[in-house]
Image (cartoon, rainbow, N blue to C red; front, side, top):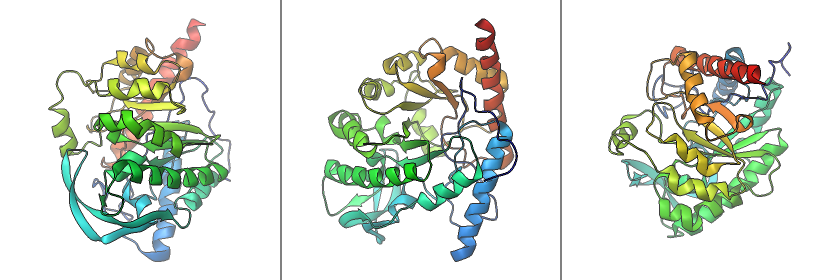
Length: 352
């Protein structure tokens, strides 16, 4: 356990990042999403742990309340998990359309998928040793997993999603046992495949979270700040109402926290009313811009949301991961997030 007195965990408007932070240049190519590791073998294991230590230190220094690993142990938010599963052939690759947005070469499902050993549990134990604060771990959601593969075996999106949900539940239960307080499932596919979300997507997600005592989050955003995503956003018009499809279903689900994109997006804030009663992890930091928000901008975004979510259910967060940004920009955004939450927290406390 690290020495020194840990920062106070704010019970009102706690702060958290969605997932990723930039990796150090000695671990992977800077400002490049999903860049390959520069180390191998034992050096890679040590390097990832060193990077995780730095990520924790930077979050603590910035005043972030709920700490994550900054995804220093994940090269890709989906395939790093899939790499550890049986039934997937990474040598047999096919080009598929990812979330109806861009083409990518992906591995192939060639047999029954299975999890022969834990994927992130040792990394989570290491994270738990670094801080006394609440910790959060992100896993890919079942629907987003099936969208990142070519299925030659099941030939059914739904059937494969159920298989992945069972595997994810095994991993999530072991992460909980390792001391993880909050388990997040990343489901950007929920903003695209609306019929699947309604027919089986939420039910499958609940299967992945079944039996957990840890709090659960589903993160649904409009993607990293990469060209394919920003081009897609430009086609969505003056209002982005995709959440209108999934939020009523999630409001009735067993998932505890809904994570959504807000700052500098065209998401109408009134859509948050559709998840009234749930905790809301609101994206108050734009990951598609290198401009560092002012604390007041962050406070304004959070304050606007209070019309539709009670203050005791609001978590201040980033829109998505910060991985593609320069490290100094990411650090600045973390500090802005914390400072902005401080401004609003003081206002709310003064009103009592």
